[in-house]
Image (cartoon, rainbow over all chains, first blue to last red):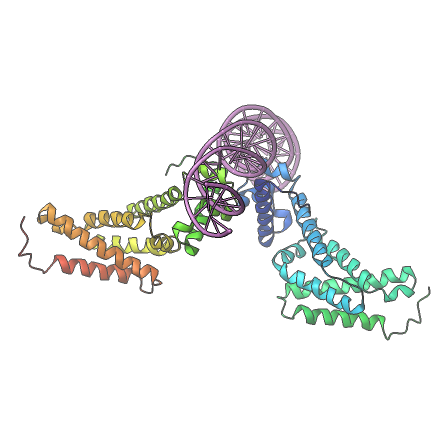
Length: 195
Length: 195
DNA sequence: AACTGTTTGTTGATAATCCAACACGGTGTT
DNA sequence: AACACCGTGTTGGATTATCAACAAACAGTT
């Protein structure tokens, strides 16, 4: 996201189109949402929509990409060097989810034509690979499996927590996930894996 | 208010400028509110403001006139022929105040450069003259004094009720005002008045 | 197949807003 | 008096959005 000044009108137009699509997604499946419906909700002319986006899927993808970028930038604010920092990073990720829960709940529930959950997993994968690299002594092939296991588990747990009303604190969730991950890396005998 | 279609952009611009001025009036006295401040709150360019309004007082006056017009149109929906209907009209006026209380509270609190309260009294005066005309058997000169007395008392009572949180029902307020008015018209000896 | 209703994608002219800039006036400070 | 800061009122050119209309595609019905 560039710091270059954006014309107020464009800023407003994109904001209301985004908000309108998110609102409509709370009420309808994506397949039932039309460009016409989005524009009515936003009170924006249809030709203006087409000046900004190709179609409703393009708008959705832009929303997803924007929040992924925002998520990455948010996490860049924090340093991560040691295993203790990895715990903090997981907590920060969960805090981000909590802060953006209104938007994330909608996006994580979308069925069809949405790659959002996959994108979130990619962010988490990068975070985890960056923070937890104790498995590096294993072959690269096994690392991929392990990180996939850890990432999938973590993201699904966070998603469940989010959609279930975030009753536990981000800190407790981070400790839970951290323990699950480390229990799997530390203390287990890797006797069946080859390099 | 014409049914002619208004360009969406103009509609939006006027709406956010109005909302912004009302918000700022909740936080500051009118004398401290600048065109620059309104435009910052509304996120609208200053030259656009000047394309629509002369200054902040012009905007305020437009807001006041709009709600007065809306009030009048609302009351036109109801028939008024007999004294019983006059009670109903007072109730309708109080219901209107209740429905628009967020805006009316702000406008009624404005000090300086605002004629809103006077305009409300004019609407009430027309309503009362239309509904209560039993005093017509007195000379016109005395009618003016009497209606001024009744209108001032009524509007201040309604204002107090509004700003105090509207604890009583519109119906009860209407009955109270109606009794106060009729007690003053019926049963009193007008021995000191000349025609 | 024909029909109807709805949505899509596009177009060109017009309207509205934005932006940066300018000169001026008011206020407070030195 | 001079200066600095802030807000005002205005300007012109550029950008963006609106509007109404059109042809085409799609979905459902007969």
